[in-house]
Length: 432
Image 1 (cartoon, helix red, strand yellow):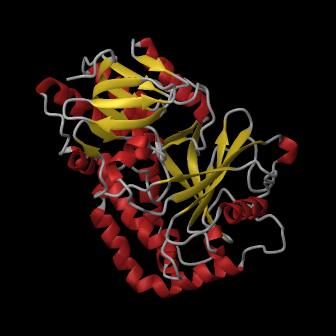
Image 2 (cartoon, rainbow, N blue to C red):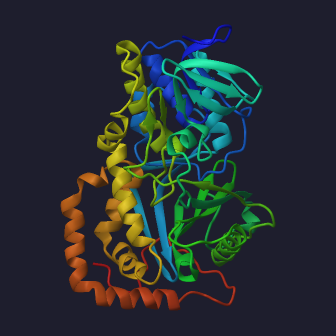
Image 3 (tube, rainbow, N blue to C red):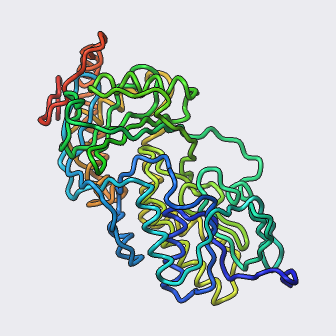
């Protein structure tokens, strides 16, 4: 029985970011009207994020009948850097770079326009799962009940904590800043009007296990940041120092206290993502461990979750035991599982990362495959034969590629001078 005197819902969605808005939209498509979205903050609110709508965001928008209706920069190329090595890869279709403040507010507005109830400035502090309902305690002291609760409340998810208990794991660490980029301040690495996204792996030489990014943002701005994989421990101050030093190399100055950091969890195919009457989507379920991407991932997961919840509400089968398998078998789960495996190789502690970095940089087919993955024009998990072929080639060319990688690192400007980022390929070594 539901608690007397307390509002009861079919579904309460915890979190009003892309994951929460998308799953509410999917439920609405299935005719589920009794949905409440609770968002701890008021839109528009700041959200640390690179802002790239990568992967299969276009397909997710179409599946959810949502629109990209905020200013965005269509980035048609990705520039990969490691020391003196720079290569630009053309994307099969553009990656749209948005500002999360605008994007999240737009999605919530679209969901509201369909009649979904969204309450802002009210988060969830606790949940309690009973045999026939879930009790939600909000930051305003309200006690609400629902047949199902969907956690779309990010890396610090209350719902995720309910599922994982006291499990301990190291999170990915990300730091991000948005900077104005007037023409007078544009350095040789980044120029106003340049729509290329920069993925800079040079910080790997200094102990970072991840990459630095510079993305174009609407309004003559750039989104800059750094991601660190948890194979080693690096504190916030050290990562900000790495971000500042890396940006200086490409002609960008990072002001003091401009970068904001946050922890995120990488996707694990065996991590708990559901329990009776409860499941998670988006960052609460795990981001892409290789790139740190979360927006398209969240929207794709929302399609899977919304379908499962809508069916469960019709049939009364609300255990959701098959949700983890459904995620894993979907395109998004297959891509996340592959990227998790690649991240463990590329971002490993010690010096073993060098052999994999040399494969990524100096095999053109690998860069082309991953560019297609980022753009969403290919499912990388379905390209196993090409990946095995790249590994076979690497066996014969590993020595020369390792030498080229070492030379690229030694060619790094260590005297504070900017390193020009060319729009053409400059490989400083074997490229096939």
